[in-house]
Image (cartoon, rainbow, N blue to C red; front, top):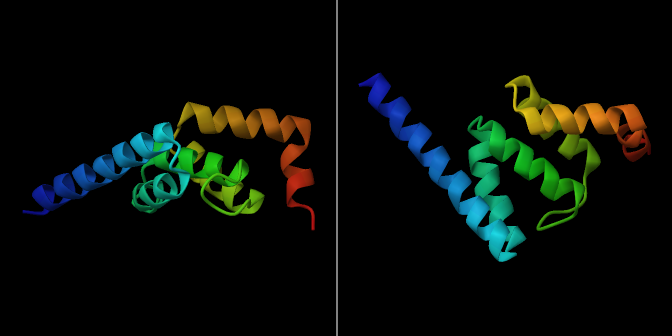
Length: 102
């Protein structure tokens, strides 16, 4: 029974990610952020990356570099290449340091 519950939860997270992507492509960034947030909090690395991008670019959510970095780090910890590349590129340029300074 536990594996069925786990599979059901993974399906819900995948559906939330899909909804987020559809909303994002339609330009409804608030709805995208809500859907990505569900999947991101459930541990979906792609949704974590997408939510970070929305925070970085102030789309559907308030701009928040610290929140963006937190989601990027969670996504990168799971090996999501786009998050790893974003952290490496912006880390080298000092972008995160500058964005996080008060």
